Image 1 (cartoon, rainbow, N blue to C red):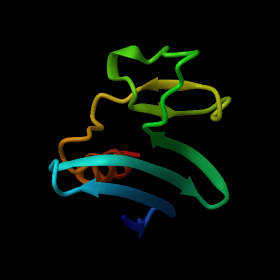
Image 2 (image 1 turned 90 degrees about the horizontal axis):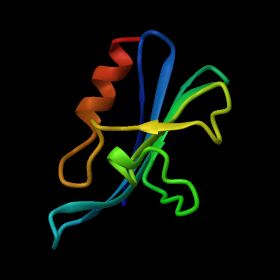
Image 3 (image 1 turned 180 degrees about the vertical axis):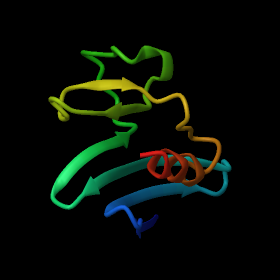
Length: 96
């Protein structure tokens, strides 16, 4: 497993975890959280929700966003199992 944190000048912190499967050349699972101070801005995860597959266009990838960040999931088309996610996450944070 690879995990780490990146701190940005605008006070944002990215915490990320990826579990690479080197034999299959893919990311087996991941999770990332983006915070500013004590406020969670959003997070991405690949945890499947069989009872509610609302962001089906990118299932199981989804982004959790306010106002109800624990339950409000939207599609995450820039997040994948087959390529590194860090460049897309950095670009999204730098655009904030």
